[in-house]
Length: 246
Image (tube, rainbow, N blue to C red):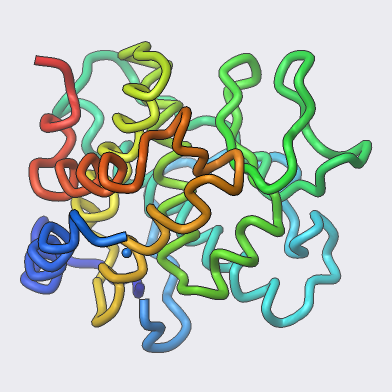
């Protein structure tokens, strides 16, 4: 998945990618054309808290860790830019970015807590109490090894929860599926992403991988693979409005 600046809201590669993803809804799914260029930002930077370069929150990441952490920084920019640019098309009030705590290592003193709950291993989450987003480095590292789309999906999904807290307030599985829908709307609606061959396959795989093996993708609270892929595709096809209650 690559980044670029475009003046067209739905460039043809994105439209083609949406069609390919929708065709994969029943399947149990970025090729990297080179280092992505971070998009230009005209707004204030997102508060990224104590996020660091290493997968364990340190600054001594190996080359593979530096690759996915760089991708994560780009994903944060892309997702924040999308909501900053499109917020008033869908909602009233002023857009506020959540804090991005970023990478943590579970069971360490530096790992964030959400209220009284410690950050779980192999998880990514949005914490309403602190209005922040964080992710276990191992979850991101392992997902990125399958393709860089994983990083964008995780961040866009958790950002969707921040949006929910600001305007919606759904609960349980419906809340998780709506966050998938908002993630699809964000990634396919972004003017800063160029989808490449294989990206939609990676997104479909990311939505179904580890479905019963990690807190972030547990089907009991996130929906099963078909539900998640359908929700994501709904947002990719119909945009933010398709994710909102009618």
